[in-house]
Length: 130
Image (cartoon, rainbow, N blue to C red; front, side, top):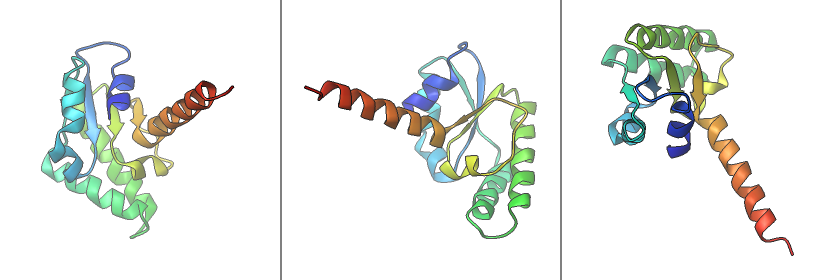
């Protein structure tokens, strides 16, 4: 979460960042706290759009049409943008698995965490070399 928040705030503090994640992830406050500690303003989808995220995740997992998932995500991003978001965080690893390309910059948790994992593995490999 820290790496994702750090990447999303790389340009300037004071930015509004939309968080697209499951209700459980949002309830934990992890993304919100991490963004706020960097001077960023988290934007949480209202309940009707949170339900669209949950439905999109279900569609991505194979419970229906993937094209419906893309349309649901498009609606959520449009709402977040309309409420001042200058970027969004995909706080659920499934969200980046669609071909949907939002109009806002996206910080994909799966992609960022994979990058951090590779960097840590390479750093450890370098440190343990004779």
